[in-house]
Image (cartoon, rainbow, N blue to C red; front, side):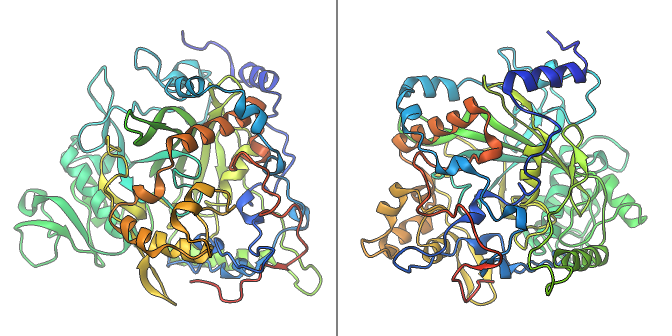
Amino acid sequence: MESSTNKENFIKELEQKNNISYTNVENFGAYIPPQCYTKTLDADGTLHNPCYTCHIQGTPPNFWNDTDLQESYDFPEKMLKNPYINLFIDKTAFVNSIFDQEIINYVRTSNYLDKDGEIILKKIMPKDWKGYVPDCYFNFDQDGFDKNPKTGEYTGWVAYRYYPFPGTFWPTNSSTDDVLIKLPQVFRQDKQGNFSKEIYKLNISILEAYIKQKDVKLDYTVDEKKVGQDLNDDGILSTTDTIKFRTGLTFVGKAGELQTQAKLQIEPGLFPAGTEFLHTVRYIDFDENGNIRPSARIKEVRYAYKEEFYTSSEIKYMMDQKLKERHPSLSVDPSPQLEGFPGDYEKGLKNLFGWRYSGYIEDKEGNLRPQTTQELISCMGCHDTIGATTDSTFSFVRKYAFGYWDKNYLKGVPEPKAYYKKFGEVYEYSFYLLNNKSGNEFRSNDELIKKFFNSNGNLNKTMAELFHKDVSLLLYPSKDRALLLNKVYLWVVKNQGYRYGNMFDIKSLENTVHKEVKPRQETGIKNPIY
């Protein structure tokens, strides 16, 4: 049954049911995540640096350089005391009260699609809701293009496989997830304005070259004469499986026409206006052989929409201005100022670079509900000014193939490599383990530590050699750990305590996480990684 409730009554019912507020904000500094309170020094003086994964010198047009945050806890005064009290609560009693089969049944029950394959939120959201309402059916063809199962029409959403970001987003530490992209309609049309999957797929690959700022190898061959573009820049129109990144690289179809007419803005490292991302965070499910897979149940539906396009020079100016605002007078005010983000829970919050973020999260009964303003502030720390992002995003630059996760998920995927100015090209995950001396920010994944580190705390190089070829050896938790992580997260769901931290383990983390820090307290890291 479709909702006939107006949004005011809808929100009021959710507030009463879940004991939350959609408008009151008790922590304006929630864009600083729990991981930033990690103790980088052990009691024995061992140094851990998980900070560099986010706080690093950006690649232009990300001109932000926050490597200094590797060296000190540079928090606004109101954030010196750690607000994420869930980190210090032992959840053992709750976890032990949940039977294994109970949590298995829970994560395998979809809260996104009903038994008829309809999107639940599409049916229950108020008609006067002005924000994003999910419109992806997760009904993909072999290339990851989503289709409406009833009409057979493409929705515009396209799934791609990518290398998980180091740390928290490894399945062994918290969740499984997926990301989809949707480009504006002109990118999906031929020059006559007709939908063309071939054009759309090629334009996504051309965009990939722009975002990665390097050549892209296709998994198929393109007839350049048919699309009217010299994709490999060899001076002739023939067949190719390569998109050569260079100045003047042009999209195909209707988008290419608009681009040549200067009616479509694009620059290296930047997405065009109108780009959308859909990111679902899920529980950890597994098959009869114990192989990990994303669950049917969704923890969060995260949505991003690029409202405005800013040029690289405009971005440089805005970043310079923000840097000045961050420390207006270092001699008088030793702490940075709390940041603010325009918007609300309905339309989402907007960052400095023209992106708007909104989302849905589980209510106490496991149904998806709109996130509160407080909960959305938590999204902004990772999607505003940090050095690690590419136009405020993480995953697309990490894309390695079209398509939704298949039955193998990450099994058989080789370890990605990363480049750092100080170290050159390295195996990315191995480098993280070497510098963090653990498998997550909180150093709470004992299973991973026992498997990949020697008794002296050093990385087991023999084990590292194995996951160079297959990252699942590192990224997959055991079945027991998967069940544990799922149960711990359910504790947060039942308490609706996302604002107090929703990334943690069963035990209290007081040994590895600060409850309070001093202004500009040093981390002990003297040589930042960049």
